[in-house]
Image (cartoon, rainbow, N blue to C red; front, side, top):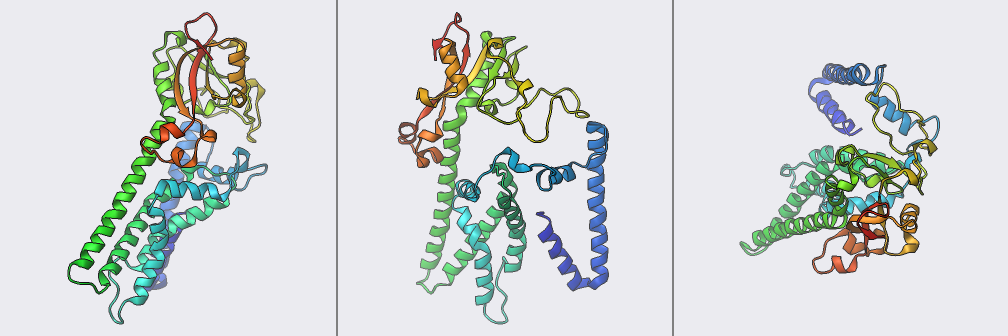
Length: 373
């Protein structure tokens, strides 16, 4: 989808320069390259991995956008505001600049003196570069299932557009009749101010993520060397998604799931081949009871424990009721109980005090050294 605008631009430029013959030649080469890339990917997927003819790109499209039953909404839905907030948080001052890039480019072309084309970047070039991001955003915004990672392909182009907008604003500032040197000084100060604001916002966001959610990885790094977990069956419940990967399990330990509030299909261990799906398996994200292990068969539990007992998960409540003991824990953000500003940005001297925290911990059965939940 993101290649459609540049492709149309190339066809237009070729038609202008070489006519219909050039367009036919370009289209033929484009089709050949696309077929070659798609064929190579299909060959690798089919013969090396799936053991049957597979076109992964087509499967993704059919499953998510043209399903016979359900669709991507099976994995959760979110309002349009979800993407709007993520764009604002991740791009900061670059977002309004990127949004202004095309209007500023058009205004620059419109206000340029007759017979004198505006300096770079040209409005058509800005539009051609930004349009793939706009096409992708329109596609993603239209889907009911939304994830922050789906926005990642647009960030480089949006940052490029923001840079162009800053160039055009600087050029406009320099065109204002001011005493010698004052205009250049103001334009330079404005550019530096925008750069510093972007740097400060980005650093604050990075520090916030590390401070608020770094506890998850801290605990799993520590868990690798815990003697209590060697060879253990470690169980998790509704916060299963905080488990990073099997690479973080201690030696000979295994991961299992305990029935919880989560109502979808949970992951299974890799069976060594992609030629067949591990059973039982369904394609409608329905809960599979066979995935779950009784709590009584678990040697250890990893769970997030909220400070308010009324807000604890089912597994955390069961662990507390049955007298399991904590052997390690790390503080992680409680987003539902923390202010929006201090959970989104790290503010020195304020975030740690204003935010509310939960304990992400490892618990073992009574009798091992540790502290009660």
